[in-house]
Image (cartoon, rainbow, N blue to C red; front, side, top):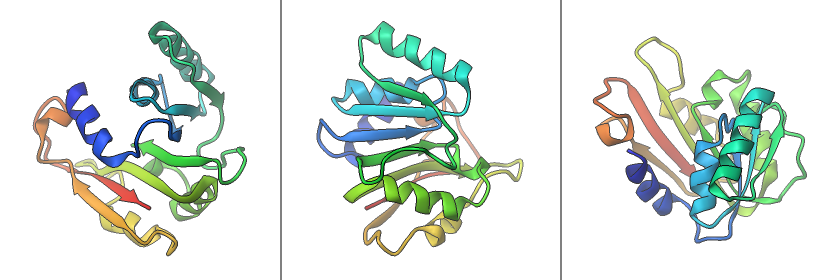
Length: 169
């Protein structure tokens, strides 16, 4: 499963040495993968426990990743410092996602990328890809929506709900 994600991430991300913000990093699994691909990673999460676990995971793998306890909806970081912002299954749970996307966009360098991995689940929770696409600022002139539902290797089995990635730059 992990190798499937890594192959896909490589197609979405710039070459090594990009500055990447992992929003809602949780235990740091994605942050560690991104660092392993040669990127400089910053991870934020609202949970001090998750950040502590992420720090342990990064140290175990020998990666220097900067982790911070921080609200994903209101990141307190300097503007225009990241080449890529990655967010996996967090945007749908935040209040006023369109405003959140605008805040995140301010953190991107010119020509930076926003990579959102989201879904709309059978429970009725989540956001449809079309909804997020309509929220994206006009400054993104290239937008790609990739269906992720049809590949069980991403999820460890078949899924019946809408799962996708939006790459905007």
